[in-house]
Amino acid sequence: MSSHADAHGHGEGGHASVGFYWAIGGILAVLTALEVAAYYMELGAVEVPLLLGLSLAKFVIVVMFFMHLKFDSKLFTGVFLAGMVLAIFMVSALMLLYHVVPGLGVGA
Image (cartoon, rainbow, N blue to C red; front, top):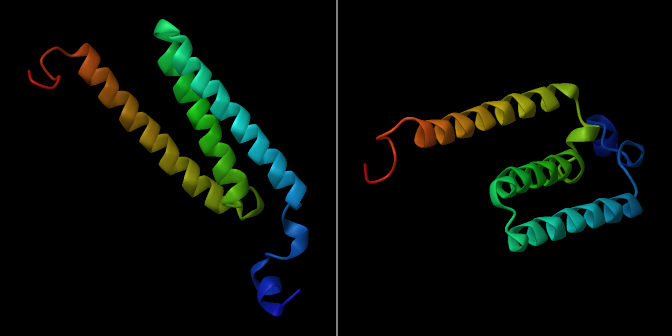
């Protein structure tokens, strides 16, 4: 290990193996296949929440493992989660406003 890797805590022992990343890639591929299948099955009212949930799961997996958030300081996890919660709140609030409050939709 180089001194640069030691100084920043990014040595070989702190991260998973190549095989583990292949397994994560396989999980992401399965989740993507489920998304595509759900889209083509036209599940009605369940479709959008299901697709949003699958997308959120893929997003969290990518951030945790491929961006190495799982192996970094818990402070970074907290900052990321705060931003994600804020984004989810804002998108949910806007969706609720556009579907519940009359006259706010496009072309109103």
